[in-house]
Amino acid sequence: MKKSETASIDTTVFYRTLVRLALPITLQSLMLALVAAADALMLGKVAQVQMTAVSLATQVQFVQNMFLFAVTSAGSILGAQYWGKGDRRTMQDIFTLMLLAAGLISLVFCAACEFVPEALMHAFSHDADIIAVGASYLRIAGWSYALTGISQCCLTVMKVTGRARPGAIVSSAAVAVNILLNAVFIFGLLGAPAMEAEGAALATTLSRIAELAACFVLLLPKDAVRPALRRCLRIPRMLVRDSIRQCLPLLGSSLLWGVGFTSYTAIIGHMSADAAAANSISAVVRDLICCFCNGVGSAACIMVGNELGAGKLETGKAYGTKLKNISYVLGFASTAFVLAVTPLVVRTVILTDEAHGYLTGMMVIMAVYMIGRCVNTVTINGVFAGGGDTLFDFYSLIVCMWCIAIPLALAGAFLFHWSPLVVYACTCLDEVGKIPWVMARFRKYKWVCDLTRTLA
Image (cartoon, rainbow, N blue to C red; front, side, top):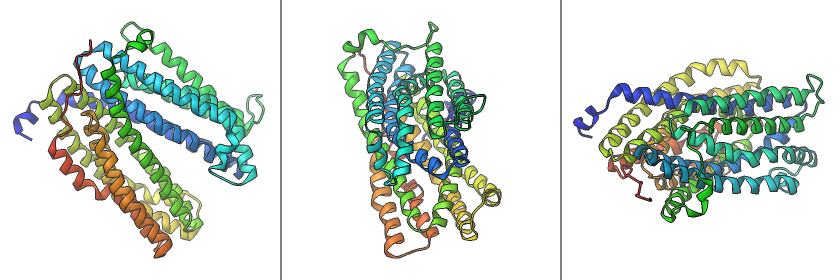
């Protein structure tokens, strides 16, 4: 990177934009992470079967979210560039494409939950009681899955078009409503019937309705970007092809990552109950701490994309370099934070002595893992994605996760019978190990690319 390129950045504008985008997105991620924790905590006070059934049933939404992530991320990548270019009409077309794809995905998952919920639950458990409770949850929560895709598209467009703050407020308020209604319907407060798992499903559905209604209100002002539904059949074919070209690698990466992380949990879970318990606690801590790097990563994608789409390739390149450097600072800060909270976390949770030992070791290993997680999230999902370089993430997951980390963890757990801590370290190898590869890719600057076209 030439000094002149870096010096051309207005650091005041850069950091103001970064904070304006990253903080609302971080808050949104944090609030969403708290919903799962609230469900588990409240249903855990009812019965173990209720908590287990809902935890497994929500894996259906986890799978749905993989598909929605690909659609909204592709829209975010192209949208950031066209918005930076000042092309409002194409931004509307992108919004329309996102709604069509996400709406179709959401309807498929909703129909599956309504018509074959037992079959879905059979994929996760063979226990009749768990399947019955989970199926009753899905029949109600399935309606919320029909709405999720639409609201996610609206929130994505708000982030891309500089309205991240109101979008985050809506999303966070919906989460707060969800948690409040959870308590009301699960335990039967304020005169409502005690519905247990079905109450959690009803709370989720009502909060999604409220969230979507609020999104529609935010789309009412004249300056808001709205979908061009009237010309949905006249969207330029080149834009459709560009969207598919971005979406497919993102979908592949999302599926590889989601199934891979599920595999990590399954491998540790089969080693011992103590290891599984410690891993579940460490996973909650990891997900909460990762909210901030996820926010910075999303902000990086928008910031870099805006500059590249506006034709300011050197500025976009300099933004990417600065964000990459920030990712290391964020990574080491996260490492220090994990080490600082480890004694508090270990003392707070009620576990066996052996599980406490595993948890302490996992937290220390996770502290090192956080460096790789932050660097890769900001660089791959932020900087690279801002320039449309989405295939690299797909390749890196195949090599680092599926060809190295997962086989090594499987061999260590079931062939060599290593300690759960060593196996856990194997599951963390993919993020730390691919940093040199990521940096080599960064220096090739293939991500410095203007994806926009003249489509009028």
